[in-house]
Each structure stands twice: as C-alpha cells, then as structure tokens.
Length: 152
Image (cartoon, rainbow, N blue to C red; front, side, top):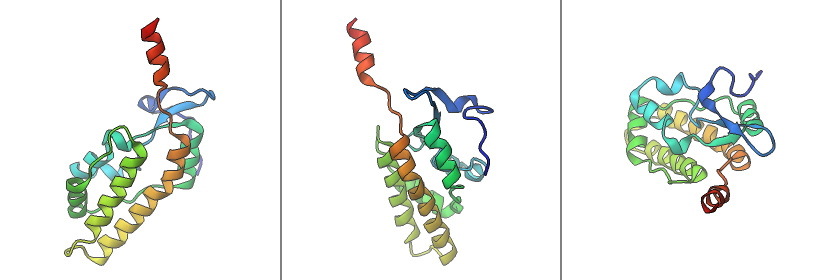
C-alpha cells in the first residue's frame, strides 16, 4: 500500500520535526477514521487523547505499511468497552494496553456472540500489532528544554 507524504492533506497530523529531521505525526490507534466514526461511542474511543500518540514520521509510515487497520467493534460491545476503559494518563503504551484489556473483558460477556468475540479478537490483534511501532517511534517532549528556558 502506497503511503502519502507525511502530514500532507492532514495539517493536524503534523506536529513538528523530531531530532532526526523526521516529521512528528499524531497516530490514531483506532483507524481508519471512516470505520471508527460510525457511532458516537466509536468516535469517543478513537478520539481519546491517550490513544493518539505522537510518532516519528518514519515509524508512523512503517506502522501503516504493517497494520492495515483495526476493525470497529459493534455498538453494544463498544459501549461496554467505553464504560470499562480507563486511559493511563501520560502513558500512550499503558493506555493502549488498557484498551486491549477492556476489549478482552467486554468480549467475554455472557451476551457476546461468537461473531462479536471474533471481531474483538481481531481488533485486539490490530492494536497489539501497533505496539512495537508505538514503543519505538513515540516522541515525547523534552521537558529539560522547557525547564532550561524558564531558568534563563
């Protein structure tokens, strides 16, 4: 799958330039956008700030080459996940793990059928497949620079 130039066509995705001169881009772990905006409950999950890590542009491109997307959950399962999910403040990887755990717990409910459970497993696989790219490509602000500027 061909990848477009980072940040082109989506100015909100571009955050700046990382030390290695690669652009820093926001990555929605729940993608593609069209799938995760069908219902407000899916949109709420997709737009949680701790599920949109800033990634080095190269890692972001490699992630999209490796992972085509995360299938959306059905409405009832998504509601259960949203009710259970607790993001880990200031921790994108922890928030990703928390979401996978919430999907796993919700998919084990007594009223969840085998199709819903299968889609949940594929969604968890899609999220877990992104984890190494997020760990490797995560760009966090250098707080020492902010502190140094305040001292000056």
